[in-house]
Length: 46
Image 1 (cartoon, one colour):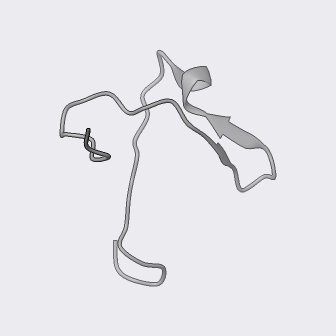
Image 2 (spheres, rainbow, N blue to C red):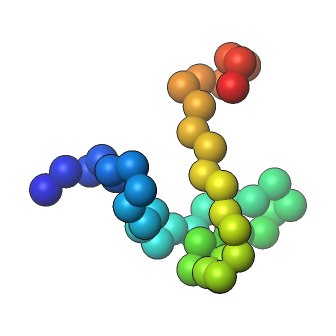
């Protein structure tokens, strides 16, 4: 089994800390447009 997500596949369920000290739960956003952005390193151009 691979840990990589193939392009076009759904993201796995996750819950992460938000900037406002709350939490972001992907499942709670179901039905709304969501953009996941990954960048290689802080302070680098996106």
